[in-house]
Figure 1 (tube, each protein chain N blue to C red):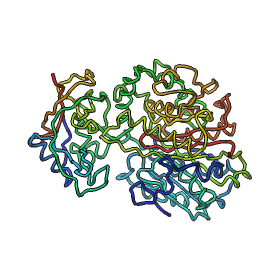
Figure 2: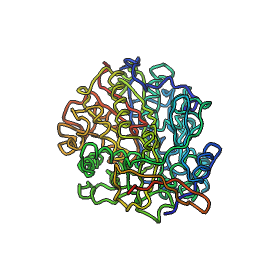
Figure 3: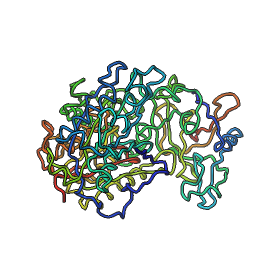
Length: 136
Length: 439
């Protein structure tokens, strides 16, 4: 499965640097005591940027829902259709969600509600992205 | 001329986007007095200068003026959502004036249209841009502007453009690197569209309420049938065939469970409206259709993808605001044109508004009954985007025509005094409540 390569920017670099170290590090607002993903310049709840930092979280979650892509607009992903596109909720805070192709899960055989764990796949040599795998 | 964007920098006083605002201060004092619509092509062919987006905007505007019995001199306000809605024409060479830029080809700004039509008295001119790209936003904005006295006779134009080639398959979608917001979506094959975002929620809906994902088949056939009765509709003119439930169920998947026939098809077409004061409208050619309220929803999901709970809270908010601002309730609404950019959207809205008593999880059972225009529950009588092509205008046009008693073959046989007309997905919506009576 090819993955378009994410291009880190000033805001996202800490996240992607951590992913390349096989860690999941999310923005955290100390004022609201709330995680945030994807990263933003300010806390989506209180609007403050002063108390926004980074916090490593445990890579466990559950599958909320999914679709199967048959006709994506994304050129690089087209040769590998159909493929799963799932929404994973983070156990630490189910308000945080991630997209996943669920590597290892057959197409359209996604166990909604199942537990998943964080894994990493190589988008290109030296560049990892975060993915999720169903826990057996 | 001014640009209005949902970028936090422009005033949002016109918004009616939260509960507690009370009855709309201009309830029944603003009216839609004119309707116009261009032909609807699947795509601009790149050559016919009489079928550009700009030419179609001029056509629709002229028709709206004629419908209302107004002249160019009467228009003192122009509101447009200029776009673009699809890919740019560049780097292909521009045909030449007035098509020497994207304006007129893939966008239609208020100033381009004012110039093209030769409107001599426009002193209120607004381009509604990022974050406000819906026809319901434009109409709500214009209704507020007329009510506030910023203009008296406002031409609202809503262009939807589509060029040769596959819609939105170029640009960053063709790259093997994901920058900016795309870095959080593209790697996993996800992109921003109500067809991806809300199909994920649609699947949650079906699981929660124990409904078959095939439950939209009756709605698919009904909307096509309704759309075939819309004189300007794409299908009525270009593919005038009904579809069967089997056609729907056998149409190929885009993002399973989203099928091809769940999706509206991008079009090149323009709708136009004349919004004026209720006093002025009474003296014009058509029976006035009064605006009782306008609302906007700007839902922000906590995560990347909205949850069913969030979607249901946003549609509930829209309904509550609509009732509060209009002073009406579910039993008062006769015509219900919920937005249908994808067939997977309207159940969220109809259930929130409890139109004809439809409660959460009951929409598919409702669809399986008689929802035809001549039956007791004429749902989405305008055919929506699915029945007319994606112009985002069928909802508003039909609502006005039903209240006027001018919907022709689509005219409902039940009472048609009050209409809900919507645009947008649950998380970004603009809706209005219209009535043939001012109060």
